[in-house]
Image 1: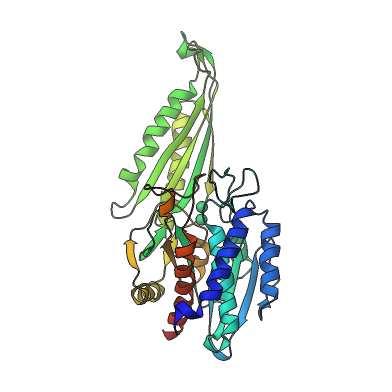
Image 2: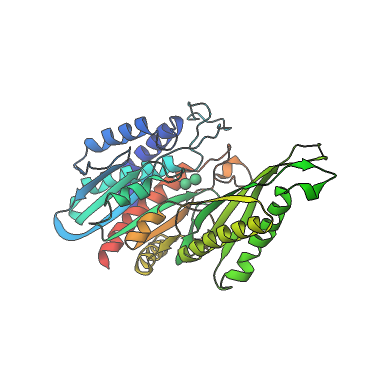
Amino acid sequence: MDYKVELKPYIERAIETRRYLHAHPELSFKEEKTSAFLREQLSAMDVEFEDKYEGYAIVGYVNGTQDGPTIMLRADFDALPVKEDNDLPYKSTCDGVMHACGHDAHAATLLEVVRFFCDHKDLVKGRIKFIFQDGEELLPGGAVRLCEQGVMDNVDESYAYHVASLLPIGQVGLCRGAATAAVGAYRIAIKGHGGHGGFPYLSKNPTTCAAAITNAINQLVTTHVDPLKSAVITTAYILAGTDNIPNVIPGECVMGGNIRSLDNDVRAQLCEDVKRIAEGICAAYECECDCKILLGYPATIIGDAQYDVMAAVCDDMGLVNGNDKPQMGAEDYAYFTLEKPCCYIQIGMNDESAGPVPIPHHNAKFTIDDVRGLPIAIEFMIRTYLKALEK
Ligand SMILES: [Zn+2]
Ligand SMILES: [Zn+2]
């Protein structure tokens, strides 16, 4: 197949769709109009919907003409509470909301991939299950609910991509094993006993206790984690007392931060360790402790055979792997990877016209080169599906 010729109309539509979605962003779990727009487009195609899911996610199938596996392709479509600082003709029309992570591109790509296979059903063996997913950016994320409702039960394997503004056109980010980290957050409320700065022995100072907890939990990575595995513990905030009031010992202190690892079990262990240490140190300092652990997304684990599929497509398309390392960010596609073998790739779409230094995701000046990037993404996902069938 001559992809360049064959895909031209799909690419033109994808750029148009992406820019429409970019101009009309909606926050996580509030994507009513985005979902309705995508559903209307899909309804004009020869697809079958699966309508048992709560929320704004759209799940359905492109049924092939021959027997074969069920391969799931996923795109997310939520935006972020960021005020866009770009001067674009398709700039966000919704004040304070912006597609600053490129999910507009994901939805536009998958829409055209579905359309392509509806127009070329002879290429589909078994069926393609498509998931347009809500709420990726906000915990607990839209994927976990879909998984709990059995969305992966009839799926054999899955593929997805994320745009990458830090990678140039022609490069991808693909790694074996864990692609993104498992995340947890801790919040520790310490209750002591306030008093006079000149008489600390008459108080129970929660700030001293917080300092001891900070030191102890920041040593956990070196003392409790296998050095061949990776983990991060950060203390992000310690709040107590009043600025410029040195003679009042506060009665309370709140602190918190992140716990991350590329290994789901390491994260679980560290979450328990943080809680145990916080409670133990508070007891030693005669303070009350209320330690809450919030589990974020698990690690995105890449299937070996699925990695080989995407790596082979990179070779076929002449794409260079510019980042074969996992990253400590998180992605709720991870939930799908807990259920069935999956692969997830970053596709470089750095917008060189925006300046010499690439703008990171979630930034108010985030842009992508959709004219050069979307053709790569569409061809990549189509080739990925076809390559997966060859296994
Ligand atoms: Zn994001
Ligand atoms: Zn994202």
